[in-house]
Amino acid sequence: MANTLTGDADLFLPEFDDPPAEPGGLLDEWVHRAKERGVREALAATLATIGEGGEPDARTVALRRLTGDGVEFGTSSDSRKGRQLAADPRAAVVLYWRELLQQLRVTGRVERLGEAESDDLFARRTREAQAATMVSEQDAPLDDLDRLRDAARDLLSADGPIGRPERWYAYRVVPELIEFWHGSPDRLHRRLRYVRGDGGAWTVSRVQP
Image (cartoon, rainbow, N blue to C red; front, side, top):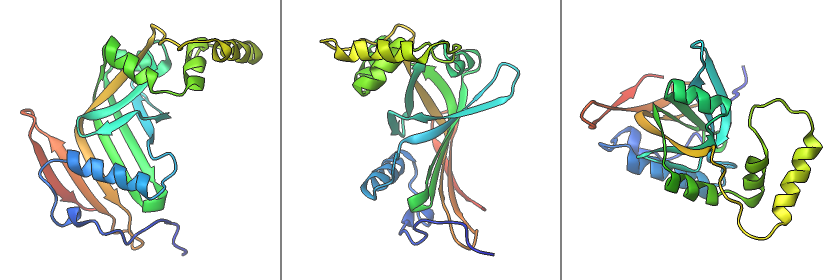
């Protein structure tokens, strides 16, 4: 059977033999390498939440920050995922970098950040993304796409910054588990798992594929 895995299986990753005590620095290294090696959309991630009936729900989001302190993204509080996180603030985040045969997995509780942090995160978005967020009621029924496009164009053509809508916030997944994965053609993939204890200290272990 042909090998279906693609990517760099020969990366030098000494952390799997001698893991650091905490994952933050290693997470920074992996993200930096992904960007340096030209991984496309290195901060595109699958965000999984819990629906009102307990069912899993998932979608791809653009992360704004990914550090040992947390995984940050923005969304409208009245969107589907915003409502789900308000009801059950637990989430999982997965990033897969095909070019490097690497995967990151983060699970934890989600906190909604304050006005200043949300303003800062919104200001980092492209002007087009800001305009789209301002005119769209995310997850509401769509009756007229042209109307939305016209409203967005009006905002883009106006002078001055586009302010953050009151319903839009920054969110942070506070890590309770971080797992580093590197694929292998023989399917004996390498996995390094960090689990945060009640006191905040991390426990690291290598786990079987």
